[in-house]
Length: 331
Image (cartoon, rainbow, N blue to C red):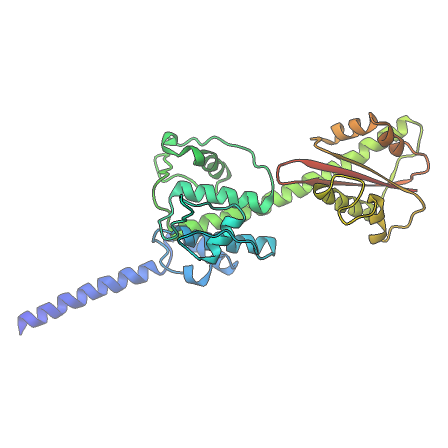
């Protein structure tokens, strides 16, 4: 009887340890709990990934997190697909379609394989590139084990370290082939979302500043020529920004859907008798683009045309880091 009672006590103790272990796995570690909760509130964590936080993330699970972030920030559903032989996971196919992930050979993806830290860094960098379409500055990682990071992951590790999205694992080591846990994945994707928002804001501010500088430099040329400086029109500026984005699709005074560039003014209800347009691409600064325009007879004539009174300036940055510039003039 005593032996049976003792066996029962041991069984209950083992059950308690097992239940405790499961329950502990259902909540994030102390260091991650606040960030994971924020990510869940922000809608960045699919329901099926809101548990087992300390377990390694699979490659497919990370795709689900990355696609959720991409579609949430961009406000658009990924409709394209890239298929693999060993999975029909929709998030894997979406992530591959926008260039976040690639296969492991022979058109296989290994969806259930554990995600490594260097794979996570690379996917995060590609995700940021895909969302922002901004050419990111390269940074060399400074981890003590840099030599063990695969060549294809070194740029990503450097960017993750420099941006604060991913750190090391202690003793200034990156441990590139260590598994990446679910809570680590969630926390770094949350940090990536903040980084993306900051990039958007910084880029928007830069483009606004560039447009204002072009206006200023153009007016300086007008004054040198004894002409009245241009007034600034919000409607003209909005139309010019629209035209600058169109130039990525068709670098021409003809719009992608047909019609001449200044015709966009009708869409913005700008009233005018005559209008003109200057366009440019590839110049890296307002000074450079205004100099180029002033060195071109047709562009210079637009800038110094006496009958023009107002100007709108638009600047657009494409995914390769190329800038597109537009000036719209009206009388």
